[in-house]
Length: 324
Image (cartoon, rainbow, N blue to C red; front, side, top):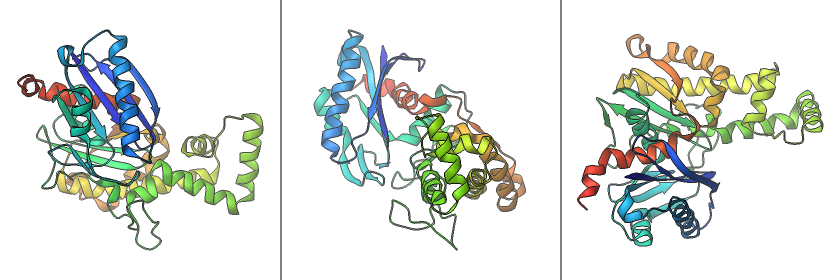
């Protein structure tokens, strides 16, 4: 049997078919249409069917189920409560895909919760850890005693909206101010990069020279990481602040749940070397000593953590799905 997986992210969407060890057999990614969710869901369903057809398998006969990640809070009925980046509310995700695929074997979960489940099932992540993504936005998940902590309204682990700045808070996509997502996401890093270009002539000249030498150079978090590794002080300062705010948010999490490990995923996790010193420094300030003794590292699942996590949802519940 195979595991179906769909990851609807803030920037891109991935559809895949995996084996029962979480290995990706067939996969395709494409941009997320952040306007009309129905338009994007239709495209996503069509792309998934194309993946299945390439393998010449049947959705109902050969798939144990389909795990679907969404970039927001999800209730137990597979309803997306709210996706801040897209401003999608009360979307009946499970019903839509169940009707489209003509199957009830659908599991819908918050994308970062899926990453955490994937880390536990296929990454050997342990039984007590936090999983935080640093990508278009910030999300989080809590695994305690080998169980995903969902909370009363299925909204546990919203690390992206912990308040980390009070004196000069930036506005978050959720409408509030000072959230981690507004200060330490890939989007926030890009915005700070763009702002710095307005007042720092040396940085502007450096970027122009970069663009002349490499037309693919972009004014984004990855581009800024290249400058930081070359010793650019403005770039280093932005990543240091990013790490400081992350450390502050992580301190809240470790004080509450006392995990063994904190896994970081998403594109910015590839710049862990630039942010880790500031994370550790802030943890030393804000976490109590016993809880602050925690390992901070990149996800073991790599770039495909979310889509592997979606397949892990099916693996974890395949016995239940088999009886549907």
